[in-house]
Amino acid sequence: MEESCYINSPLGVAKIIGDVNGINSVSILNSNEKISNNIPEVLEDCVLQLNEYFNGNRKQFSLKLNPIGTAFQQRVWKTLQTIPYGKTISYLELSKQLGDIKAIRAVANANGKNPLWIIIPCHRVIGSDGSLTGYAGGINRKQWLLEHESPYKQQRLF
Image 1 (cartoon, rainbow, N blue to C red):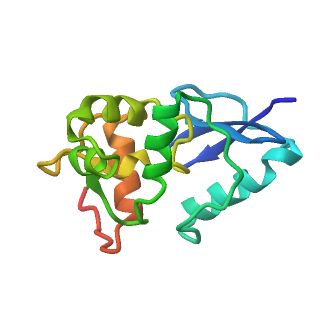
Image 2: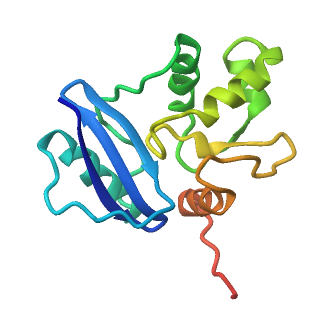
Image 3: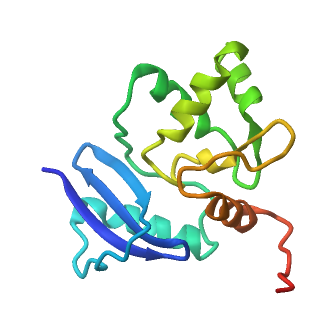
């Protein structure tokens, strides 16, 4: 049976969905859902690991994942999981890793349909020119995540 919960994150309320087969979805919401008082047992480890990530104590997730997608999307999402914490790659590099540089648009589309926000690190994919191109959660959140993972912490002036 599918379970869900809502937790606070520095970027807004996150919704987690999963069952005994693994975590299906982690998404950031642009609404103020009521934070869950009781976390379903099948989601407890995910909540714990996300909190550790946001607190700066986790760089890699070790969760049973079960994202729903096409075979191609699954290949893209699996490749995304190989991008190291604190590193970025371009959509072109990602396409090359998947063996077809002409598939860059399809790769970018699969990246945008990633249902496991943060856990499958689609935020680590940037434009070839270094720009923070599209992110389903919003460019400001993508920038926050990349700064959070950066080994070079910068002070904000304003």
